[in-house]
Amino acid sequence: MLSENVVKLLNGQICKELYSAYLYLDMANYYSDEGLTGFENWFVIQAQEERDHGLLFRQYLLNNGYKVKLLPIDAPPYEYASFAAVLDQVLEHEQLVTASINNIYAAAYADKDFRTMEFLNWFVKEQLEEEKNASDLIKKFELFGKTPQGLYQLDQELGARVYAPPSLVLD
Ligand code: FEO
Image (tube, rainbow, N blue to C red; front, side, top):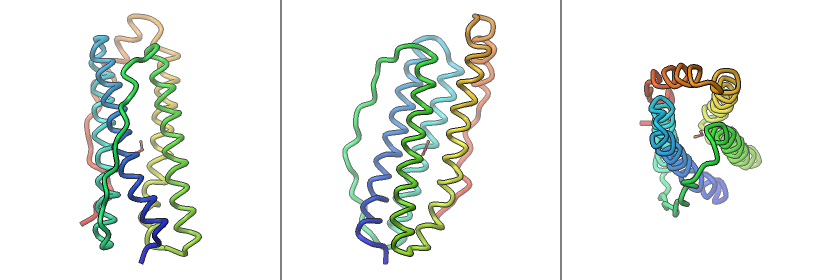
């Protein structure tokens, strides 16, 4: 049995992950419009990963016998100030997601809900990677993104990213 509070938080996390997918797709659209198709590719893959995260939370609830209630998803910003500003927003957003995962973990810990803690361990590690990826991208943009040649190279590099399904699999 998971507590009502933990179930509510897990259910809410589906919405947060799907909002992340929406946000990154919105950012992909922005870069596409600006002609940076490598950045677009990176963000489309990021959106796919977030969709996967949402599906994992859904599956975990279903596997435990709970009914999932999908919540409304906010519209993403649509307008962005600059290429660099988007990257800063990614890091800020991932920090918010980390805080949300930690919050669920704390609730599970308080309940001695070891099953949910075990499930969340994958996300705790994943958030470290997500924040690092965002920080690395910010640094690379600072170093190489300020000249047309550097930006072109960076766009090529991001265009080579390929989608990989999550290593966590729930039957
Ligand atoms: Fe699903 Fe980027 O956190």
